[in-house]
Length: 319
Length: 250
Image (cartoon, rainbow over all chains, first blue to last red):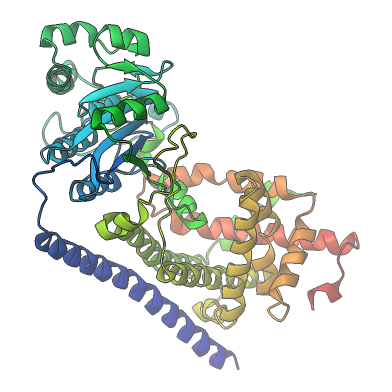
């Protein structure tokens, strides 16, 4: 009897192992399939290179929501979603422009710049971009907003914070020593392990990070200068990382108007000289499941570095 | 009555010299869960990567023409997760349930004797796979429902239902709903103790990150065995206090 149940148990174990492996592989191959078919579709679809506006037709302005920390994917923000939304709007003949609804404290340089560049590509079609700053549009949020032809802000907006954080690290060597843990990273290249929690940063390493920070700062101020039509030196005077109220931002030329959201939409309508213009909202919403919450929670404790609060390199954020 | 330290100390003794099978069981469970996790993660990235999916799901519901004085309302764009996703989730939860029940069966046998236990005993834990799958789904369903209220009720209920797999492992003939009911009765007044016991293993889990998770092969059996001891103690307490009778477990 025992032998029989052991065999039966073994059969069940093998079956669920097989099912799990198949599930894993199925997903991998189906992802490849989708990405291949997606790419081939892209080739077939002719890109719309020029946009001619006719005020008698029914066009719409896409209100694209940029909320939360600008990063690859978060609870409110998703980079791939944003880029694909901009691309699909670029090819939509009924779309006349984008109104960026920004409510973000900033994020990483990479993602903010990628979104900014995608918006510039969108503008190449002749369509217009507007930005509306809601509660907060600082750092990376402002960076993306620079793609707009006009920037409106709510009177209670907090904006600015034009600056860069290249890295922050907690040196936990003394703490680890105190609790009797020796963490060693074997590395070749004296700066390979820089800013790791188990090594004290040297002067040279701080200089390395400072140079990265300076470079990103130059890029940021250059974009502000071009976008706002300001002298780069004037931009650098106000770009010391501080935050500005809507009123201060307008005085410094960082925004165009202080409006409510409805007033901003009215202003856009008058720009287009059309009452037929409508607004459609595009917003990323993450689908949460208990498993994904649990998996995310578990994955956050997998990486020892995460326990020491190390942040990704180069960010426009945390004003 | 709830003696966390005693359960953990006893667990260490119970596992001394016979860790091979629990380590193997942990390894198998981890391997399978890894594939289930991968499939879940890749599926999510598939949704994110798919332009067409976004074109459909980056939906708009609020359109203003003449009435643009109306309050601004965000659209709720939902990623229309296909039936395939639901099917995979159900399958993953079912398999997780089967694995948990098999482990509970193994540690239940470890509790009974200090003799060596063969790997075959672990395999025998899979014979009640249907109950395990059902228990996994039933457990998840109720925890999710409670989570809708807030995150905390979900956690509280997860501890309230936490003993149902031990109940089923020991009494595979009883129904899943009944096992949940027994678990609720057993944990009444002890959920906080179970929670404290659960977080008392966090230090070990933190340390295991420094070993790339290899230490989990020792921690998981230690944790399971400790919770098995806690279950046995809770059951004894309930029987002695007359809260439950032996007939409840049939």
